[in-house]
Length: 184
Image 1: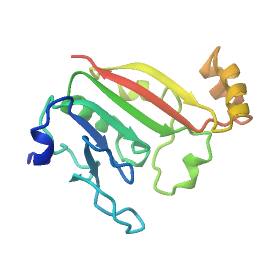
Image 2: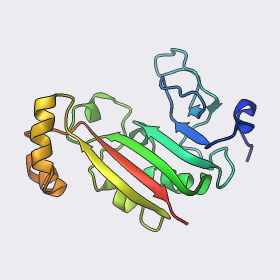
Image 3: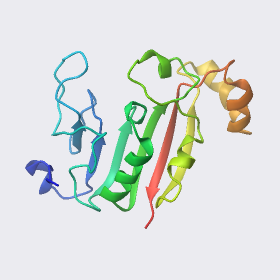
Image 4: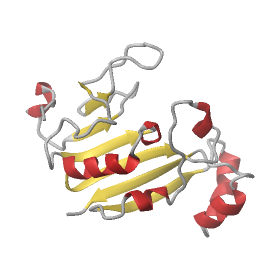
């Protein structure tokens, strides 16, 4: 496996951070990885490392990263469980992994034809089975609209399961954010 950490980031002190599937969301001081340096419309994007996230192993050493961000990426990949397994490998103990995906009830889940998976708040539970990664926080993003967000908070404060089973059609959620921690 070839180590693809950019030289400019190897020597920097501080936490090692990976922006996995960065797209147009380039972050300074992070290693920004995407499948290529162009998007699906052939527009240029800034990346530090190119790699297909459906190909394993990822081009990074074991126990390297302190923090990983996957912002609307996991739903595009063939094997989300395998991706989390790979993140466990490349992250240090106590590393934080933030995963953001569209919720199955939101229109954003279905507007992109490249989405391969649809998620509920509990979808990650099965993917983390037998992993050394724990859920620190799971948050449902109801809406960008303040009124609907307020109403949605009322419905989800008691049970997200009840919301996802009976109320999602009335107040569709837009996304899910999971904060995970590697625990070896």
